[in-house]
Each structure stands twice: as C-alpha cells, then as structure tokens.
Length: 180
Ligand code: HEM
Image (cartoon, rainbow, N blue to C red; front, top):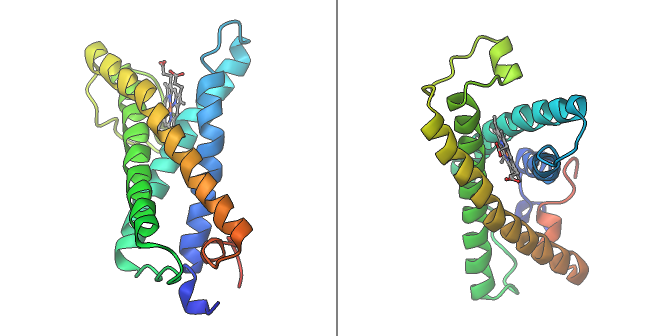
C-alpha cells in the first residue's frame, strides 16, 4: 500500500499510547475499589489511576486537535460503505466516552476535595467547587459510562483484529506506532 494511505506518525503514536493507557487505567480503576485490598496498594492504584486519567484527558484533547488539522487518509475501496460509517461512528463515540470518563473522574475527585498529585505539584487550580452532591453525580456518571466504553473498545479491537488477519490494508494504516 502507498505511504499516503497510512496515518501520520504522530497520529499512530498517539493512538497506541492512548490505547495502552486506557487498557491499563480501566482495570486499575476496578481493582482499586475491591474490598480487602491492602491500603498502601490501594493508595498507589488511586495515584496511578487519577494521574493516568488526567494524562489520557490531555492526550485525547491533543488527538482531537491533531485530527482536525490533519486530513484522514482514505480507506481502501474494498471496505463497504456501511463499514466505513460504522467505523466512523464507533471512533467518534470512543472519543466522546473517553472525554466523559476523564472529565467525570476529574470532577468526582476535585468536588470531593481529593488531591491529583501531578496537578497539585505544579500548582494547578482545581476549577471545580467543593460539593458532595456534584461529586456523587460525577461518580455515578464515571461508574456508568465505563460499560458503553468497554463495549465499544471490544468492538473496535475486534474490527482491528479482523482487518489485521484479512491483511486488507486497513490495520497497516495505524500500525506500527513508530517508523515506516
Ligand atoms: C479515560 C479515562 C478514565 C477511565 C477509562 C477510567 C475508568 C475507571 C473505571 C473503570 C473505574 C471503576 C468504576 C467502578 O468500578 O465503579 C474508575 C473509578 C474511579 N476513577 Fe476513573 N477513569 C478515567 C479517568 C479518571 C480520572 C481523570 C480521574 C480523576 C482524576 C478518575 C478517578 C476515579 C475515581 C476516584 C474512581 C473511584 C470512583 C468511586 O469513588 O467509586 N478516573 N475509573
């Protein structure tokens, strides 16, 4: 396939960094809430989850800006129209759900009056008022949005694996993360 049909280097790298971070942040989020977990382990998981989540938020915002200014390479003509539309829909929903997860997590923590170590270290203002009602609402959104997010991630991975096996030139648009 021609080089023009591949995503730009920056796009590929951002995609795989965000993918790796989301796929670790979600199980960490579930693990840190388990009963009977050691306090020191729980504290470490919370620190990783909150700060990792903030980095995901920043990277997703960067990806959206980058996506707007960088033209998307055309899909191979062998991909049916309905699949192109489905892929675009799933990708948009993934961006939205990642934003919902990251922002609700942020609001839940800040409205609850808890630290986000990385941001506190650089003196970043909290932007969110202290409010238990707001924290509870954000927590409910955070706990609910993970289900559609997990479902869409599975769908997205299944489609990627299908294209990688078929070697139809779709997976190699986003792979490898570096080089070529
Ligand atoms: C895209 C990014 C994120 C993903 C995919 C994610 C995912 C998750 C998941 C799956 C859980 C477990 C929910 C449950 O079992 O009820 C969770 C819990 C939690 N997350 Fe996140 N999260 C993200 C970003 C953040 C951010 C940015 C923060 C805060 C800065 C945060 C703070 C929390 C907290 C405090 C909990 C525990 C909620 C509770 O009090 O029950 N998350 N997250």
